Length: 286
Length: 323
Image (cartoon, rainbow over all chains, first blue to last red; front, top):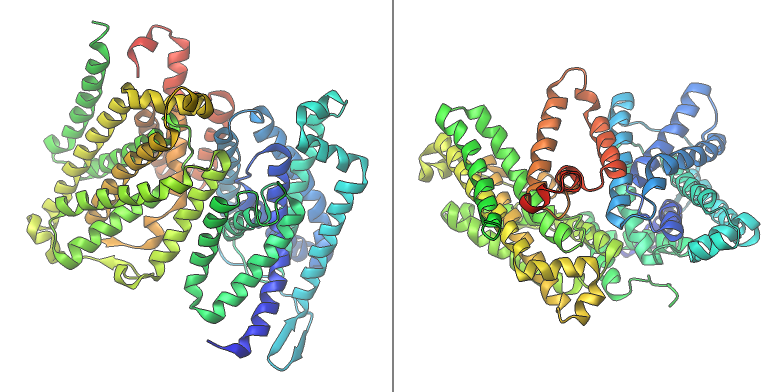
């Protein structure tokens, strides 16, 4: 056990937590609006990584500017995915939508391994670092946190302050009633799916500036997203950010007290326990 | 005739499996034996998932956890205590069932998506635990010395032995799946699937039924795991708890027909043949995952009932005969 590592590890965990939270937000938004667990979440995150990487290497665009293109790309991809895989089975039992999104997962992974192979890639970014004593904070992490916060605030404003955002929340609340009030529910569902995918791809793009990655790298973050979503309450986007921070801190702190290998046991243990004790999440209403 | 038909159907199904399983023995073909071994193993996995998912309506995403645990229990007993393989496999089946029983009581209270997520969490938690659990060899896993196979007449005979074992377990699994479906217990499970609250009002104890179904569905994959890793001679956490294989099991059940007895068998055979074809075909080998995904999407969107379910819908006559 190393007390000196306490502060740096928790700062590190905290910062990663914001990025994890952003990834989970995409998953939870989709679930909240249409009760669909998107099993293509991981590959979509990986696509975000590759999008930023390719825009950077092919056109020489700064990764952070590339993220703007990724936002648009994610929205379009999400809407296409919705109409291809989800729309027809939106009212079917969970199993059907789980398998439909899983088939998208297989297709992305299948094509991705052919096109990109599984060689690890990395984006070479150096924004310097801030150092005092044992604490080192990388510039790239600070930017990632700021972007994650900006996207979250943007999502919040969109959902609570705009007319479209309000109709998304209305559809999440009661689709039939929303439809009776003249809301185009198909459009809203497609848009929500698009935003969910957009958030996942954006977080992937941010992760790519921090760690090396392959097309399979999304799987880890998909599992983390499940844990976070349950921590914050399924279907609750703001809860996801808090859940992400909790998970990040948990990761940072447990590594001090026990070998790194035990961290996943704690994570998944907490995950199953929370599902059993408080399925609405730590901060869930009702 | 009508009354005895379901039983005859079961015997017919078992007879077909036995007849096919005899082929590699008669022509002494090791490669065909390996193909059938894998297919029968998937039949066991898919049929077991079908008990909890098809009959009861609880989607167990992490069902592979029982396969892995069964493999580990049996391997541990054989390696450290020189327990005979058959005994070790049975012990591992009972062990996995006890685990499922204890786990099922709290977890099966969750419904729908929450249950599915919890089973993923359980599989990942167990996998990380085993990766760090030194008696099970940690991340490296465990492996046999070839001398272990001497008790079974050498390594070559052990492979045949494992094949007989998987055939036997597959037969028992299919029979169990059939008997459960045709019993009062099975009717109770299907009532829970259709509407749990109504079932409860009608006097079915959902917790008891569900936990029992989960316990049954854990037993057979554990046996399959024990046999598979006995044959392999090596067990590692990654292959033992591979979430992808678990989801493939769900795909097989969907492909063949959710809630039917023959569906998982048909699904497992078709999926395995298709994958073998795609992997070995030079034009498709790199795209096999993509094609599998596309096929799954088409089935999920357009043929929701699966092959057997579709046949039953289209040909009313078959509804009386095909289970």
